[in-house]
Length: 443
Image (cartoon, rainbow, N blue to C red; front, side):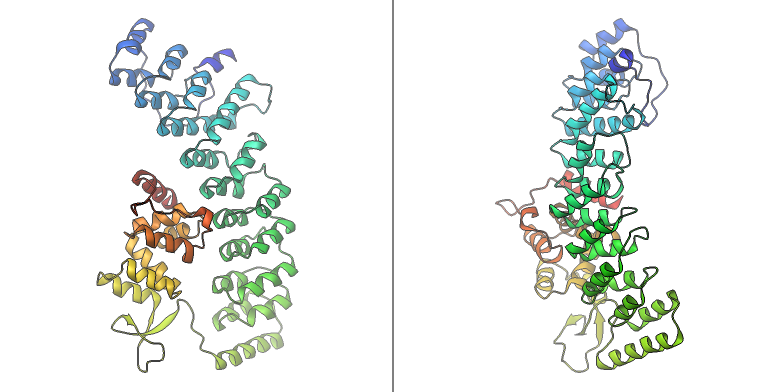
């Protein structure tokens, strides 16, 4: 055990393969460590079989590249990892977080085990890291681990950055039903709640707590979660919300084993095509089928039944007054595409659309302007994090004033979670952070 703690660990993390080569002699290695150039020290620090004391020495090397290599090296002693966990360089801490997380599933669950204790102490430091990227690595890597201290898991689940909390909330086996209810009741962002709603085997009290928030994206995920236990009373409550939320219509129709009362309620507000799907998915007697279809016909006679994106009258690709006669009908997607093709999508157009609550047009415009896939842009808008929305605005070439409006009016970000512009109007997030958020949501 002592050898493992000091270095040359036998439990290997799943890392990229290193070239098979032997390290130099101890005397040569020591000379390189003390006076070699950066390239020589980098090469030496990558040897997994290097003497632990030299790897420990490299943990305080003046070159961040060398320290990063030591952080990645699975032969590095835990004492050196403890130093690296507080390194000033974020790449060093990120590499260390990835390595430690991939070692932990192989550790003993015995808390008295010295190596386990040391590894968990390092993990605890990294789980408190000020950089969301480091905490996100830990959350993603350990989301299904069952030998992580509960206090670390709970801290990650409550993290203010939802990209950190979401994986733990969706997958961690160490969160109890009581923990989940506590997290929901204490205040939870949209993206975190959405992830929790997809968690397997959700019990009725947790489901009820989710529904009480009345978040449409989370209710969509909940309805699509076949293992979630949803009571009839709870389905009825969701149906009431769905009357004014088109995004919930199809998920409700596709829910299995719907009670007859709920089927009647759903049929009272969804489109005719969805009523037909509702009929096909449920074993209904002919009289009931006729009743549902008749109710739909009467409703359609009273109001136009447009499905999909909102459609408003327009001429030459530009919106006009809805009551102007003879104007062709153009969908939000088509309007966005026409303006994009002309190079006329900009901050002014987006802000005007937000003021007019033309949200579908804004969403389609952001996809076109950013060049991102629609599902990626949707994830960024539904994140509940101002940073995700700000990143999308940046990718779309919009300024920070528009980014704030998108956060408030489209993503419904709460004031305390807003990413606001600097005094000069610039973005407070670095370009490196923005690129990282794009990569994260695109993965």
